[in-house]
Length: 260
Ligand code: BV8
Ligand code: ZN
Image (cartoon, rainbow, N blue to C red; front, side, top):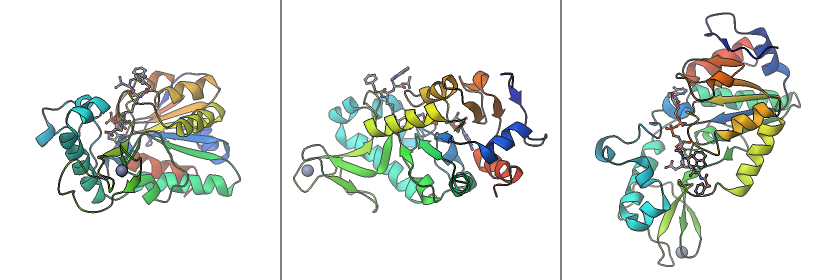
């Protein structure tokens, strides 16, 4: 099939080759970004800088240097985000991806869900073996003794959080300038490099090395589907590009592919 871009909305006939791939391709690899959680009420990373945080640049908060300089402010920002996502539920897009994984595995095909998100809404929707490239807001780690705590409770009462050993706890996310978890990145690169169909959903493609997985997949011969309301630096490389919200497109796509 030629590499021309098949840009269509779901109102048109959804491309028969894409639907066929969703039914038979193996492996399928999916990369999600903050856009997949937008319909759950979680602001994307850039939108998150509103209100109290309006005059902060994410890069000024999501770095080891920012935490070293002002652990209380950085901890407060992450705790506020943690408490916000505690009130959020998975949306139809999360559930559709969990369904696609279940159907693919039931067909004895392989499926990998790789996420840049730190909210664990994929897991809450039933997705299994989610590859978390950027960690999660639910885990906090002591800088001194390394103990990891799952923090599911109410907002912390003081910042930074203290470990039982007296050390301060940092959020279990990957900050800018920090390496991604080695095993997660290796798993993601292997999944992208062996995929027959690679789907990127709700990501601006701005953050590396996560976004680079798209090139890994395409260069290894995968067909590439992008689902996003806006163009991204990868749109021009997509075999199919669906413009819209993942919570609306994914359930329709699964229904059209008979994976409902
Ligand atoms: C590293 C956790 C080695 C923290 C995050 C190569 C080229 C250029 C730069 C670099 C490069 N390699 C490394 C870098 C530097 C840097 C980087 O990428 N900088 C960018 C900004 C230029 N990368 C790193 O530092 C990484 N580490 O490479 O280590 C190293 C070591 C030392 C020095 C250099 C390199 C670590 C990156 C991880 C950072 N941590 N998250 C936290 O959450 O606080 S990244 C964070 O931002 C999010 O996790 C997300 O992945 C990312 C982007 O955020 P958003 O834009 O909000 O979200 P997203 O991109 O997903 O876009 C939202 C999309 O959704 C939009 O397109 C929108 O249209 C769409 N949308 C909206 N509504 C919907 C929707 N889609 C569908 N449905 C809807 N309803
Ligand atoms: Zn400790």
